[in-house]
Image 1 (spheres, helix red, strand yellow):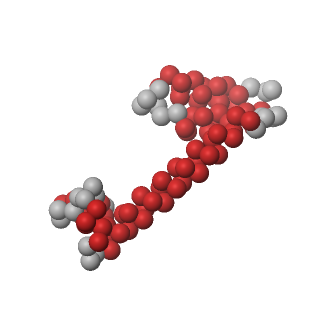
Image 2 (tube, helix red, strand yellow):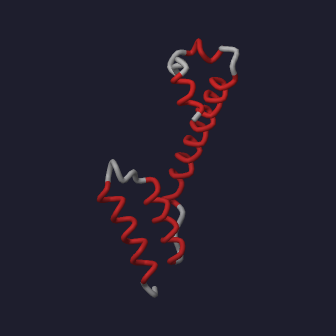
Image 3 (cartoon, rainbow, N blue to C red):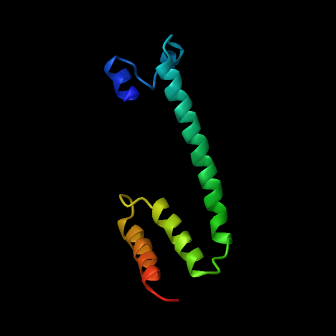
Length: 96
């Protein structure tokens, strides 16, 4: 909502001079962007280590499939996303 209001007021995020304006909203949005980039970097670091962690139980396999399904963007790769979700569902129904 803040971003929409600022855009309607003529604030454009790709102009750094607006971040020094005497209003707090642009600074808040810059801080949110900084935090999101930091979280994305941490997520990528965690994902790099996930393949090395063995799934020794059905629950572990389900959890890894949950992560896979959340990381795969269905808009970019619907088939792979659906496959991960399907495998997860199959495991939930089975009695391994």
